[in-house]
Length: 274
Image (tube, rainbow, N blue to C red; front, side):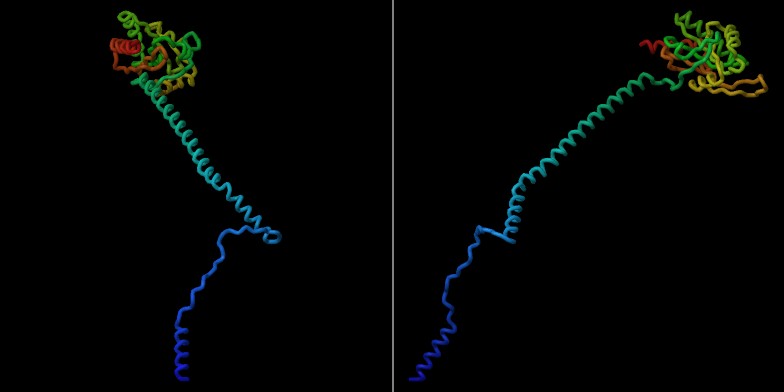
């Protein structure tokens, strides 16, 4: 009997040891925000910090809005300005191109020579290129001591004047510019031209002034075989046709005779009058 009681007690102990623990409800603290009241010390400082954080968070949306809008507006304004500036430059370039085309059209096939000068005529009067404005001009650079080509070209000039007047009823201003101012005084030039046609206007002047005029018209000249006052002058022998604006229209070499030269002059005059 005693054994039976002990066996029963041992069995209940074993069952109890291997049985699960009974269920009991668990309680967790609430996670909701609990308002607190701060009175002093670090708690008061923490409250100010929390308040500052809340205040800083208030305008976050507005700051984010301005951070996008203001740069966008600046870029838009800058882009508009650049666009307008580009269009202005483009219009200016196009306008300049149109003006260049007109200028080139008006001066097509014209030699880029000619320019201002200031000399003296055979009466010692000051003469500039502006003196001849309003007239067609036939200009030649030579010197009175020339042994061959010079006299032939001056005679050709005199013949051209006669052909233009008699056959075309056209008057032109013939101009002779001396490239030997050391020997060609105004009186010497006057006497020389009188032998061909007194209507030819003779010009001379100081060496520097003559050289400047020659450079403007790309006229080459230099002394050769110089022995005191006895020397020759090598030079180009072109004649220059100038329009009433004193712009060189064309130049002619020695290969033209008087008839050919007169006809060529009238071709240019008729072109200009169209």
